[in-house]
Image (cartoon, rainbow, N blue to C red; front, side, top):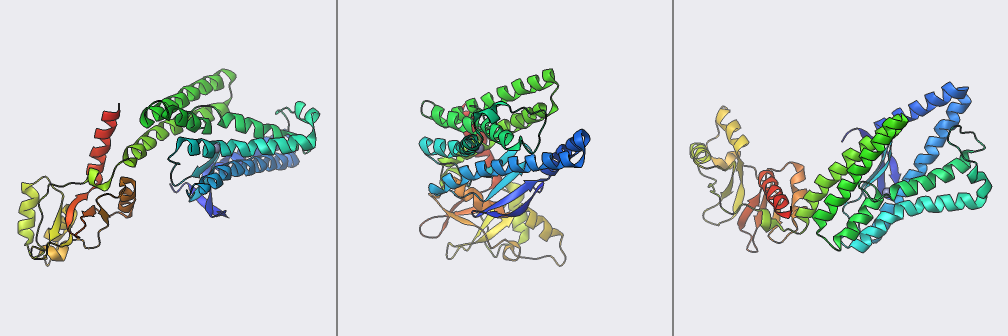
Length: 359
Ligand SMILES: [Zn+2]
């Protein structure tokens, strides 16, 4: 995801902006310029910037509430359709998840109420969105914060209301089915909005519908994967039946073993001590066979710095160990000996099996 770049830090989270956000600014600026020249363009851009400050406040509503439950938010990204606070994880308890989800819209409600108190109901009642002037700007910002809060409370993914719905459904059905229901609600909503956008000839509505549709689908897949991994431990995903090699074995023996088995990687174990010395991967073996001068022993070719995990470590933690590009995570027993290992391929198999079972 290199389509966004950092613009600074706030409350310990990195603030990032998606490049399409600048397209939106340019588009709004151009619209204002065509309507009333540079002064109007400036007001329109100011309006969008204020609006996005409100969106950032909304996201930090989520982030700072999550922090109270010990969950960090590494970054907050500004997208043209809103913000995205990437929480490290969602709270385990449905009650906490609801509070974190509602904290965002609550910020917009507070902004609305404060502005409404200052401006009075008469100023708010005359708000239209056909024209923005410096005089009407505060009232428009107030009303849009209310719209933002209500929109986000729609009970569908990826809106905050979808999380509340999911958390409530979790109480009566499984987490996976609850996620599917909330995601389906999101796609139905996106479809309805898209239809409305077509009928009303509103391209912005169509764009939002498109984003919601994509995001609801992604939420479903992503969440399903995290949900499946959540209750599992390293030992649930590991390969326990495998052939292994000795550090002193020749590359010819390694090549024969590669062909004779279905394995793509081989733990290398010292037969005298029983200790894991490294891992020989298929790719490393291929490279070594081609190299000149050709290495002779497995010990010269194997990878040595491998991430390790304990048997009862949560699988979600084990998966993060793989992110550095390691070919496998080695699972060690209490005595420090290898009991199994986990590759991306068999995590994939596990996900497919578990997902099929949950349906
Ligand atoms: Zn939100």
